[in-house]
Image 1 (cartoon, protein in one colour):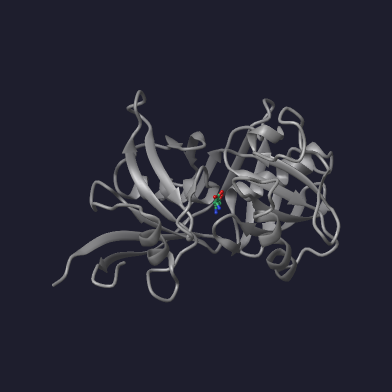
Image 2 (cartoon, protein in one colour):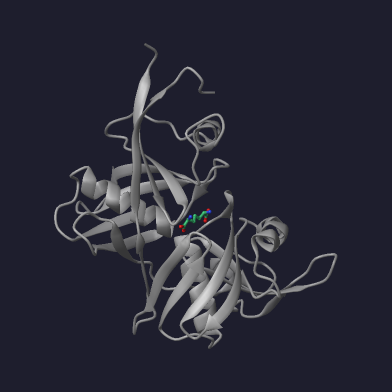
Length: 287
Ligand SMILES: N[C@H](CCC[C@H](N)C(=O)O)C(=O)O
């Protein structure tokens, strides 16, 4: 039988991830292979791929992970990905107790298991950073914050609020918050030259001061039903613009994520995780 390798599949609010554990499966995350695995017709199919745990230099208690988008690019952070990975760590016996610390390119995240089985998890996603240079966004000077700035297109400008959650986000408040509008505007904003590293895009409707509704276009993944870092970014923009309170729900097509701002301005993101299946992948089809 040709080589096979093990993987796990999880999903949270319809945002799904493959998890590959390097201690079980030797895996080179080259873009072509990541694209093939995330392909919903030729491979496993997912909104992203998580590789981990890795040891974190200088922090023996922490677990390292890498997150890849279906286009093969590496993500600096993923809110749903962090919750999925935290669940995997618990199930694989890497974690004992109700907390763990995870390191991803965009920084550390403290994780709390709210249920014994890891089906509901809270992640401290840190503080949003609106400074243009941290996103990066080049439309205004690096130290300035991107609050209701203008992003120019041949058809006219769009008003944006942009920030980093460890990964880049651009929040807009368009007349229509629909999947169609997310798929129309998302790619244009994702690849706008003022976002040299590309950007995740959120279309936001403020329902009231405790609920916002969001449609999402993800950098390197396209339209998704939910996104953890996007829910944090949309909430952070609304909070910064004085539109919502410190505790709110972010309503997405796949479901809702709870957001709480701490007194230090950090964002606590809480949501579900579901295990879907364990798989053994043949390798004969791989690029
Ligand atoms: N679904 C992920 C977002 C991945 C972000 C990725 N598209 C990037 O920033 O490159 C989340 O739950 O946060």
